[in-house]
Length: 102
Image (cartoon, rainbow, N blue to C red; front, side, top):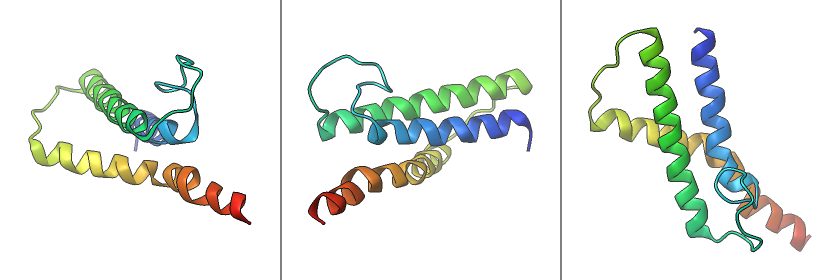
């Protein structure tokens, strides 16, 4: 795999984890002083996925021609994005609550 491929995978893991890893809004920008609600995290997750897809399309266009993708491509990449963000989700909602209760 090339350096671009590893960069895309690393950026995907980071983008998928950011909504759950921090209390700051919209991928680390401090917009509000209150705690984030679940729907904000879901919105950030979808925006992060769109950024990930745009980055992948840009890298593909810089290496070769962009190919047309069907719905199955976006379904699979979204599910892989969910899997990449799962450790941060577990850390936010399950692991920290267990530490507080212990």
